[in-house]
Image 1 (cartoon, rainbow, N blue to C red):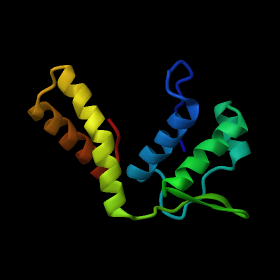
Image 2 (cartoon, rainbow, N blue to C red; image 1 turned 90 degrees about the vertical axis):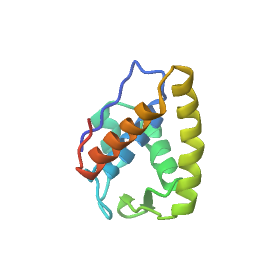
Image 3 (cartoon, rainbow, N blue to C red; image 1 turned 135 degrees about the vertical axis):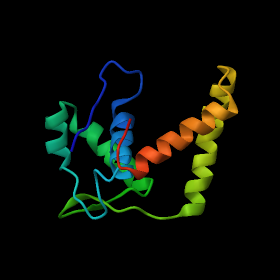
Image 4 (tube, helix red, strand yellow; image 1 turned 90 degrees about the horizontal axis):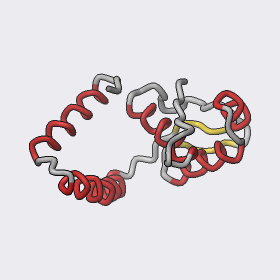
Length: 127
């Protein structure tokens, strides 16, 4: 498991951790039923506070990416609710697209980028 945290980023560490795990699921680095490291183990490996890892795991649980088992810890368990996922994606993409439009990025450039990223996920790689 490779988690890369940018300690100089303005993005909160727990958000980066959540995003890294979601990217790992999308690229099949983490698979359904796989156990994530314990809160203590991951905190020590990355060099962050255990509460930060716990917060990330809790958010991932709320968002339907993991389930928390008292005996086994955090387990990859994707809650498949496509309608809700589409609603969330639309909401998040609206802001991303608005930013892109403000920066002069064209529709074709966005489509090309989305196609490229989607292809990368299908090949289980991340560019």
